[in-house]
Image 1 (cartoon, rainbow, N blue to C red):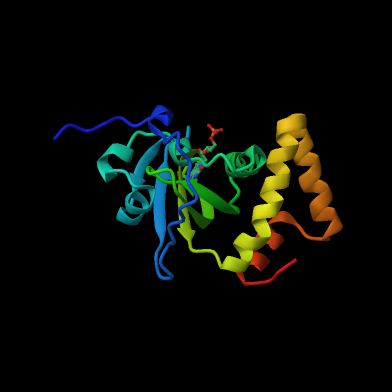
Image 2: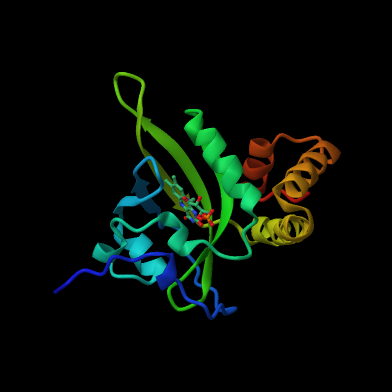
Length: 182
Ligand SMILES: Cc1cc2nc3c(=O)[nH]c(=O)nc-3n(C[C@H](O)[C@H](O)[C@H](O)COP(=O)(O)O)c2cc1C
């Protein structure tokens, strides 16, 4: 059977409101090269995203990028991991059928013995509904800010939001995952 090389063009154009829920005990795992191309994914990843596992290898991770995700979230992600730090964040992902699923993603760089980043690994769990309910309006405001003022506007908004609530970004994510509300 031939393998399809998936690209962003293969992502669904018809976005729906159909939500897929990750199981309480499930972990979604994927690994990418330094550019963000998938080099490994587990079965649950393929099942949730809705693509044949073999077709996902070599695809850019943005295949499952959902339009409701603010661009600033991915800038924070890449700035941290390229700097050899870890990233925690809530991510709404796009399924092949146009639906979506929410995850708490934990992404780290894989560093070789010479200190060079060779790949990145992401492990995701199911977030509590309270975290999703809190994050949805925040992401919506960030997306709206990006539509009018680009990423400068969303970065500023995120900064003032964290300042207003007196939390660091990581602290906010971990608190929400533990079930806290704002
Ligand atoms: C290990 C790893 C896992 C990633 N997982 C996701 C993911 O699950 N969903 C997603 O939208 N982007 C994920 N990304 C970020 C994508 O590489 C990309 O930055 C994002 O989808 C935005 O793409 P765009 O700027 O081309 O729209 C991941 C990146 C890495 C390094």
